[in-house]
Length: 278
Image (cartoon, rainbow, N blue to C red; front, side, top):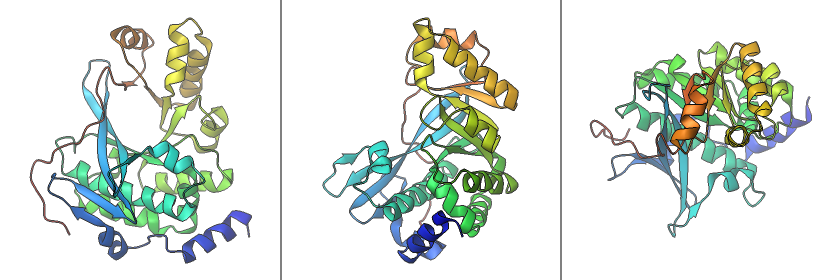
């Protein structure tokens, strides 16, 4: 048995959320018109950042979690998921609960007919390989909410994986269920050509550092990334667009999708109707 398998059996004994009853214990529909999750001393909320076509038409939204303590102090998600201050069980449960509220809020929004991009930690991806009911539960939830699985894009974030073979199996499992796969923040940490070769993504999202380098004349990193995407037959998203000049420069490269604060900031999406929690 792989060393990672032993670690995750220990985690499973420490109460990773595994069924709807456990999820429902933490999730509520609140007076802001959103589903939120309350886990330990934290409140989790959804925001959605739009992703655009070159014609500035919204073609997708990326769900992002906002984490608050009971004292209303905000915890940066990158620090939460990357910090040794929080144990792996809590990181996985927060990720699972975040995804659950994101999907519910998305289904209750004006954007429910376009793509939803959901972040996936490699560690959670590896966990789901050993607990395939995760993919089945997510698939059933998507169906229950009258969404389509090909709408859902699972973004593998740039964290390093403890076991690449498990990560490959995880993305293959999700693909088999009909979900699309993306490499997030290509050009940062473990989001590189080796990961693209490993998981054969449908979409590659270029890290904003590649855009910034391109705009000051260091064009090779972004142009090389575009070649990687072309060779993988993957669609492209460029992240971090903050000015009109950057947007026009990226359009000239004929990329597929565009994201950044110049185009749209992360916002709560108000629902069309208020739904009862359940």
